[in-house]
Length: 385
Image (cartoon, rainbow, N blue to C red; front, top):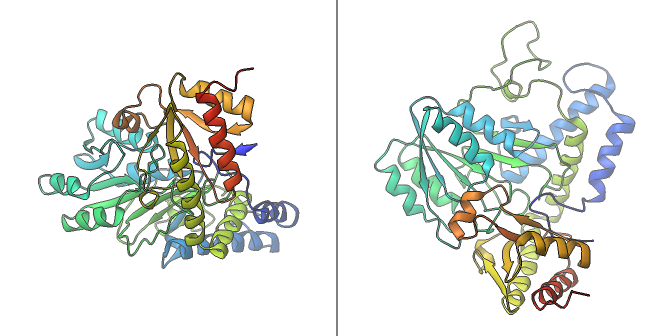
């Protein structure tokens, strides 16, 4: 199978990820913060090390500011629902995933907040000046942006937007689902107040893992309260990090795999990973543009996008193309709206959506060539027996 669905979840995983999960299952098995025996202590050390690896990757000075969740959707809900209060105003963009839009729309529909939308252009690019145009007129509490679109791959100029947000006293929440592990992130240099990430995409960990970085000075209300293994003499939620937001037993085996995935990235280097994925994307875009009937969406310049490419083929629906690729060419991709209907409206592909290829660190140039050949045969109807 040629796997071009890395924007949904990465595959394959490094061998070290599987080995770390097996090590926990066979030799640890304990629960963190609940007991004092050797197995529990080992499990706690494992979780601590995973936090430390993530802190190093994102340049977070205090790893306790990282809260573990089960995915980026949960992280975004913690941030949005925990930070915003009645009467607050928010800026987001027309490119956001439903993991951002649905929580915001719910708060908007219930009369709690007011939402301002920055429209991207048809390539999926947003201009920082558009944020300032709103910020200088309205009292905005929070700016919410994805770091890169899961539809067009376009990278959001987070650092520039954050600088403008700070100028007007606003905070910024960044959805790093498509960039964490594949694009350099520095929460200090980028002025990021809250960073939501998932473990199973470019961080190369297993599903069921994610996290939220909360900077000093950001006050969130916990959405879930319960046992933390700390301050057990009290029947009120702890108010210190990360325990305040980590009620219940953590997914320790998942965090074992996530820690190994992040360590693999640190050992390889994000810059190297980024460079190799850019090269694959560059080759694909250059050759795909030559195929008659193939229409690409999003930026062509790989310097301003991640390795996500959306396209359509004339005469086919996205679902038809994906079905043919899967059944006739053994190639995995994702068709449709990608849980981002507003993004597809922005680029003019709503309601059918697009076919999305998302290349990962383990893809090869040979696979790119095979994918291009398959698209050419589909466009020319040469695949029909």
